[in-house]
Picture 1 (spheres, rainbow, N blue to C red):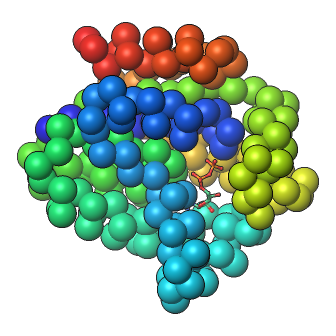
Picture 2 (cartoon, rainbow, N blue to C red):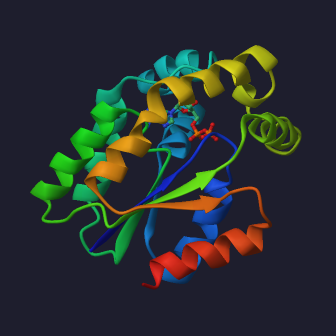
Length: 189
Ligand code: ADP
């Protein structure tokens, strides 16, 4: 069983690339953002709590996303692999993931890190707002908070994975096709 992390700032193209990767490799795509949006759409208690945080551009608590991921891994033991997208987002989540995968007899096979400068992050999110209409994409101060949260809480994972595993960087500022080719090159190794 393979375990890959698709990593990068908001708007780096993780969702777009994840779709193409799972089509080609038949991995299970686990996007914590998508899972949380499903809870929000269903109006569950968890969804209501998450909505408040997400619509401010803050992270939801580690235990919440760790629990969602654990359930998905535990209930899908017959897939070729997993592609995590938007998880882990904090050092605590990365440590929890390492512990979980050890339990399931696996490890993070590679961290596929899409890079994108802040100016482009901002542009891409505003563009996506017009297409997808996500509330957290529409407001300047929310987007700024998400970018700041990324630098503060998520970017430290780069050194974590450089020290702990197979960290691979791909320029996100390229065509969808070129980024996909670069990702496949790593996945095919
Ligand atoms: P983006 O396109 O900004 O990367 P996502 O769809 O991955 O957005 O996530 C949207 C929001 O959901 C995040 O801004 C955050 O509030 C919440 N979220 C998603 N994944 C996590 C996570 N692993 N830990 C905490 N919060 C998360």
